[in-house]
Length: 107
Length: 508
Image (cartoon, rainbow over all chains, first blue to last red; front, side):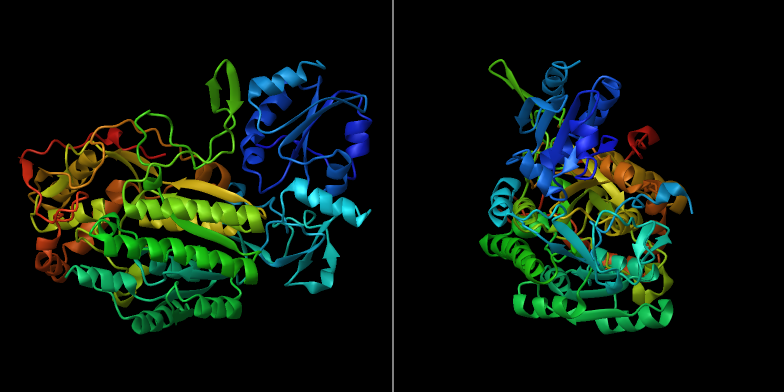
């Protein structure tokens, strides 16, 4: 199951930048096989970090302005935001422990 | 209609073949397309829009806003929402699978078209064999489909290698899904000699490559459902799981005190004949096309298929699908039943402990409809391992022997013969086949026992039994992977067959 939260251009400002809790955003696209493969792990993490970090995904093809603003040039890219600031960002497939390492920086 | 079968209800116009993508569609990977976006200084927020071909009055809109469940063009059917009067083209429509699928789809109200050049009929004839279940000429098949089932099939005799004519037909029909069965499916045929190996690879690899270019130019929104084979993976002696084409994200490579997720990488392939190599090459060509051009494809890694029955092919003798038993085109379970019917010991190669995935014909048809009903995302290359269970070749033979003797009063023996192939007789086998049940709500309906019983019912009919007798000298292999052409020696005849414990057959 993919993570519950789907970010879009319409809610990015309120759900990500203006969020009260830290947010990890998975920038993905349908042609990106690692992006598809990582969905179950993100779902598990979303459950594990519930209340501590918000985890969601945004499709870069459907939301190119946001992708452009965030300087996305490779997929998947994971950006960890806290209080609207970028705390960490990584491009390329990540293991669960590597993602946890990111998340633990803010939780 | 249960919610369970509506596996595709949340798909949107993003997946629908009946839309044109519009707006700033840029097919390159995001880094490259980002540069273009910046260069255009375009402040428009939604870059990719949809235009519905079936309802142009909707104008141009966000393709993620209308789901299949909400769209009046997608209607509830037994295997998910199906596009009303969906146009599906089957390449290789005269074959064992192609013809069966044509009738199966037609019965669901799908507008079926198809091509074939009768290669399969000719290849079997080349061996001196024949389909033991007689099949009609295409003109009679088409006539019977209309008169018996009310299914009109738009057929054109075209070789997949004839790109000009194939393109013309695709442009005329504008199929919304293409099922690609137009490949030579025989490992032994590809191992006969250089001429045959080249023929198989040319037809399969270059035929598919040409098709991909045609789809790019004429029908880029159409999904391609391409038949692969579990034989692409081989049986890795490391014993690692045989994933569905792609590593999951929790597959980790640890090396030099560091770790990497392998998630999303194509898994290694270890094909077992030049035919299987052609399928591996196809995999890469299709995968690349999805990446370069946003084509959409499911690669169907099919296990050993067996069986003879669907309600449609059984509706009339003229609608029957072919059933081959010769060394080149006979597949293992079908061949076992034919051997049992004429008292010919069932021949297992080597130890017979090779483990293989399998699926009944009718279940395979169900899978194909579910895949057609749930098109991939733009650019998505998806893989499914299409099988309903797995077991050893020996236990399959034992199951056939048990049903043949207990239900049909036959005396059935099993023989072990030399293995003409280069393959491990005993090996680990850990196939993963979750995608079809989990993502497409596939549930196998046909147990091996049920389908084997139905095969016995048909094959024991005197006229068909006679046709098996006529070609029984072509059953045992003479085509060796070494290049030799010689009969295999019998290693052992098992008179007292121990029947396979049912637990050895793993139905999901």
